[in-house]
Image (cartoon, rainbow, N blue to C red):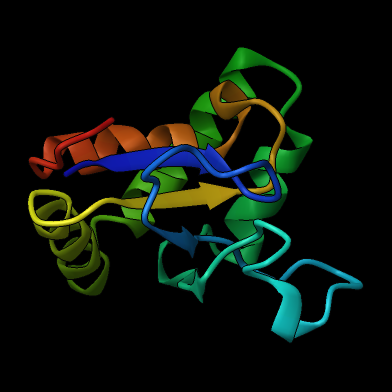
Length: 128
C-alpha cells in the first residue's frame, strides 16, 4: 500500500489505485464521464490545490525567489486546520490502500504536487 504523486493525464502506474486530482479546475474539453478513462483522475479533490491567487504566483514564477514565495504561500494554505485534516486523511489511507494524487504540470519540481508530496511525507504518508 502506498501513495504515488503523478502527473494527471499520463498513463497510470501499475497498482496505482484511486487517482485523486488535486487541481483547481477540471481538464478543459474533456467530458466528465471520461476523466477516469482518459487517465485524468477518478475523484476531483480541489481542497489541496493552491488558491487562484497562489496558483498565479506559481505559474508566473521565473526565479528561485519567486518560486520560494509561491511555496511559502501554498504551505501556509496547507497549514489551515481543514487542509491539515485532508493531508492526514490521505496519509492514513496510504497505509491501507494504493492511491495517487496529482496535477497537470509537466515538471514536479515546478508544481504544487512536489510540495504536496513533502507535506504528505511530513504527515507520515507511505510514499511510492
